[in-house]
Length: 165
Image (tube, rainbow, N blue to C red; front, side, top):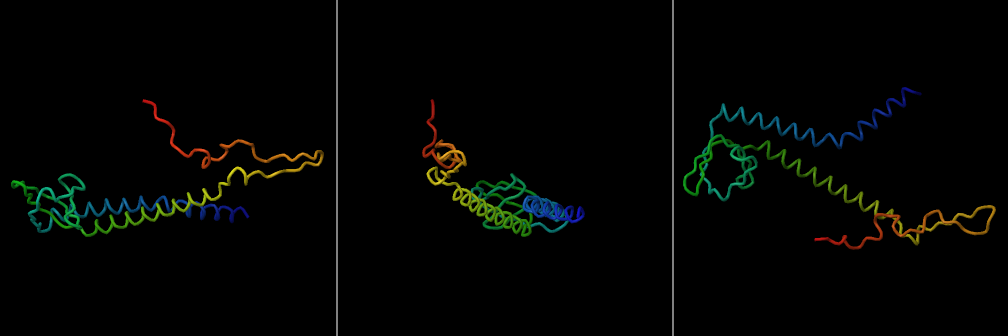
């Protein structure tokens, strides 16, 4: 019996910890891909691209940027007036990892919205929460809940608190 409890506890622990570990795994994959790209930058032929300085979106300043929809790892930068001559490699693997991270965060935000909706639906208004308990010795009903208006964090605060200047 103790063995079954141990197995069940381990399975539940693994099941509950997997959603928390998946972002860590994705970050480790991203670090691995970045390391591979650094090795490729040293060993492969590099591409030189001329772009306007205003159109470059830097992910990591002077190391990694987004050109259009593609990730680009930069080995060397030459400034020519308003233009930049970037020498480096396109990074398709990291683009895919960024897409996976964005997709996972969107999925987690949807799940958290559903959880908030579930808990807000479970929070009953005060009038509906007055459940009466009849005791054997008296004929007076006793409420299980206090008569406070603020027993639920979802009720009672319709506006933000005032700001003091």
